Amino acid sequence: MSILDDILKMVDDSDEFTEAEKKSIKAECKEAWEMEMGGGE
Amino acid sequence: MVNQEFVKNIASDVTKELFEGGPGSGNWGHKGRPGHRGGSLPKGSGGGKGGIAAHVVKAGVHASTFYDKSGGLKISEYKKLTSNQKTTVLKHGVQSYKEKYIPKAQQGGLDAKGIAANKKVGALEGMRRAALNKVKEAERNAKVSLGGLRDRWMKEQRAAMHVAISLQTRAAQVANSMRQGTAKIAVASSAAAKTAERQPGK
Image 1 (spheres, rainbow over the protein chains, first blue to last red):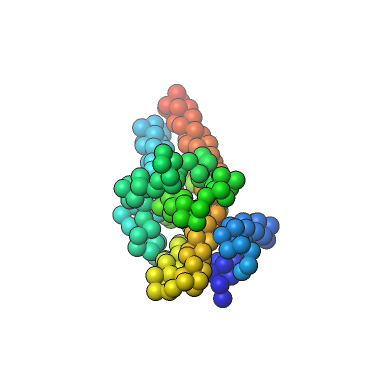
Image 2: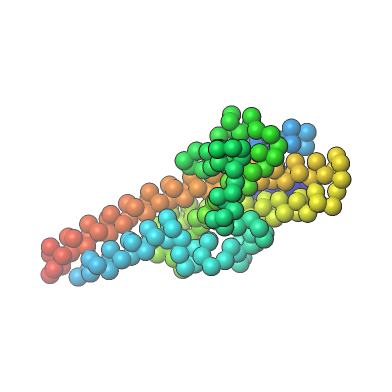
């Protein structure tokens, strides 16, 4: 499992956020990750 | 009768706690928060002043210039940098961040909305810690790897730092909204104290 997958799973597992917030946080994390990795992950 | 000085002191303590950190805050004394996912910050990721000051991207350009007032990365300018320069900018971002979570014992000045917001800050900062632990892991792997594999680990190190910055930027936004709510509570407490002072019998 990649580093990004670990973080995305943590967001999914969290009880503190609404589904919309989770979607938005995950999108930001994914964008940050892909900016460095070139979208190849 | 409500003691105005007492109310003032509470408001001052809450403000200090929120803006500067203090006993029990995320950055007071240590960088760990038992029971919160992500654990303690890895060694070397702290915000020592000397380290932050040394984050010069190129002659006359400090890493801090690549961040906006809310701590967000200025993407269009960041994208123009080389890999090494990006690493410096990202390191600056994670090392200069001060955690904003308020521990339970210090949450007296928060209303229900503030407590809910604080929980979100805690969750985001927990995930950020986890991302920073991954940064250290990638850094260790890069040190013992060669060629393309080394480059790959260095990329992952940057990517994990960038994710951490994304999470801390979100945490700072939530904390900011929480602060605004707390400021309202402090104003209300102060107004109540003044009213009580004008009407000492009540």
